Length: 347
Image (cartoon, one colour):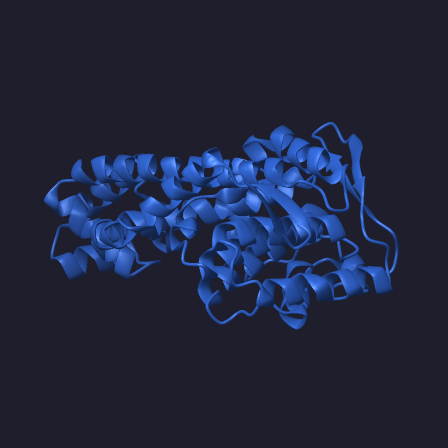
């Protein structure tokens, strides 16, 4: 059955409906998972944040590894960012953090989207002239590869009135369309945003952040515990192919290939989330009682020292130090600093 969504054609067949049903059925058990696996979810959210920041910036050409991204995030409030990759990672992290913490109050409006764009490019000195403003020069969608090469994917809206008018129409459609399924609506909004490419730079990164924002607002809160961006990075060729195959017939194009790709990514990360939860549960069950007490204390007192843990838990300091070393090795916790200045955090 072909339906029209914002002047775009979607073949809403049984294959797509089955994907949507599978994704939505997961939500019925999510509240139970939250109550049962609260500790594991906290760890997964931290890991997912690093993966999301690293993957989304690498899609656009960054060379930073997840280890480098994690180190930057841990020191973000005391660091200066001179390199372009560092500036993009820091901006993406702060924007993602804002979205996951405040998604319920962020509105899908021109001002709010411009504000997210400003935050995304906050640290880029070369971006000061255009951040938070619609593009003033023509741009296009390019695929960027690890060897530095680029491939033109498709042209975008012309700067000036065309971009502004297209964005106004996109926001108007979003607020007026009360019939399209929310998950489809999110996919369409991201696609249209990429097609317009309203800002001079940062459109790819911002499109993925907006996709997460929309899904969180629609109730898919499990998304913050697994990286949507990493799934897209892993399927980078399919991501670009879905865009190219759909965009080449613009305007009035059939967007089924793009929506199918979007839903497949969500289905895949949902499966991966359940696998990670089972792994975390198995790992947690391997802790003895004393180790559980130590992990619980660190969870509630991040940045604590070994002496503080020993004192509060009424255990011998040598025993605590031995346990801490083992927990670091098994990646339940990590440490910062050396000697007496060593402090501990949950992974």
